[in-house]
Image (tube, rainbow, N blue to C red; front, side, top):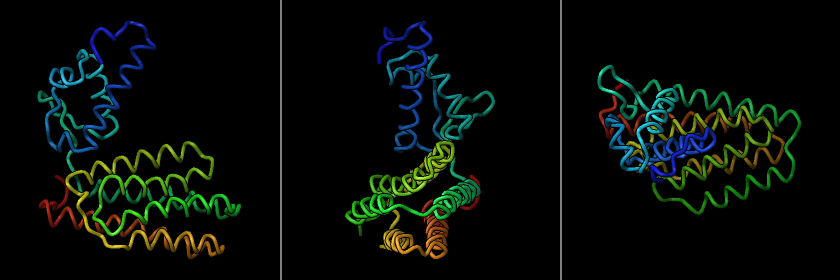
Length: 232
């Protein structure tokens, strides 16, 4: 992006703002911008070869969405990790996913839907038993987002995507190195097997356990490796 590309045209300005926002969010999610780092308008504008205006608007959006914090007279910074945030995010994720499952169970899963979940699980299985990394987390998210998408409820899907991005924000504090064994894969496989057999109560319990255990593992990992003792 170059400053010459910026335009007073509302459409072009909107496209540029979206591009800058996505670039900054990716820098945060990937760990290139670490927790607590100051987000200086001019430095970021120089990195992205844009003016300060789209950076300023993007930082405000990131602040509103929880990816950035803001301190009086000190400006913006990358959001810190808090234990209550992790618990709340996983609790919200559980509520959204179990609601989606209830909708699907009420009308029954199609053979095509089960096949799609099994296809994703095959890709997921190829990534074990290595430690958690971003690529594996993306496939895991795809499984859960695909499950939610079967409802056709776009509002639910957008909310779940936003929650999982926030969870990724918490994980990126070197949380990708978390070693969890084969439990997540086994839970995926058991969930699909129960769903395929029409054992929906069993499948829901597996789904709840899967999400809750992910929360416990992440909190324990952060506490043990990063002196993560409550809100920071």
